Image (tube, rainbow, N blue to C red; front, side, top):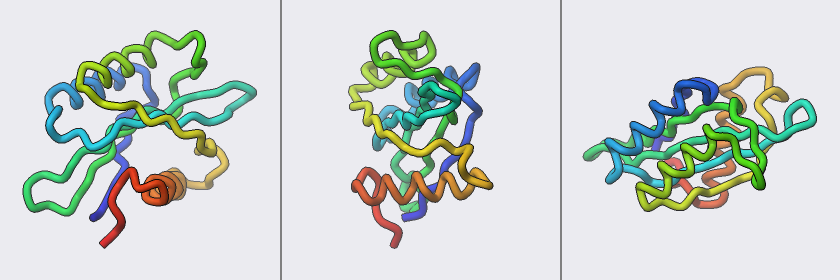
Length: 129
């Protein structure tokens, strides 16, 4: 199974696109994620949706809005709340993981390899075969 992160943006206007992808592909949702990291003294979240492969395909897309949403569990931003509502409307469980910030990686592809490894390690996505 090949998994690939598809970055929609950094969670500003593109969060609406991510929520719409969830609504129109409800039967394909595998898992929903919030990747929380430290950045400039605060916490930020990346939100993502892993979709099941289409038909006989071995390709699993993971749509992500990377690190543009402030994260505070006691007082969530409207953008994060919008994602939480979309997750609930689609009868999904939001999996929250504390991860390293992408700014410590030279290239975002290395960051996505790190996230893929973590998701495989915890069996949230299938192994590479």
